[in-house]
Length: 84
Image 1 (spheres, helix red, strand yellow):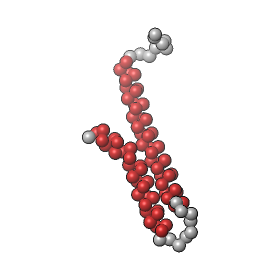
Image 2: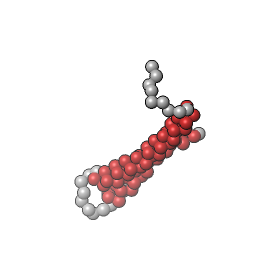
Image 3: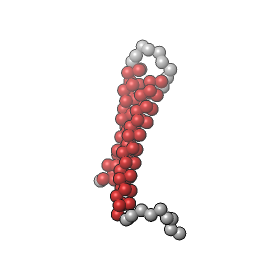
Image 4: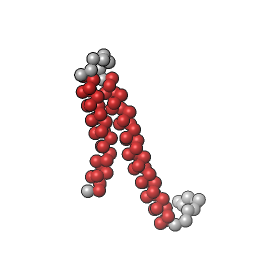
């Protein structure tokens, strides 16, 4: 259950951005303003997708950094030597 929730959270930015794009395209099709085809969808979809994907990725990376720090504490003191 926990793993499936994590995978769902990875797709959440895409679903949100797709919904915003759908709303934008629906409003644009009913508008009298002449814009190139796909222009409103580009502005609605791409920035939000990158923003929310970056947030989710940063959250995932910070969790991994915390796990690495806790594993380093369990492993004992650090040494500067490289063992062969």
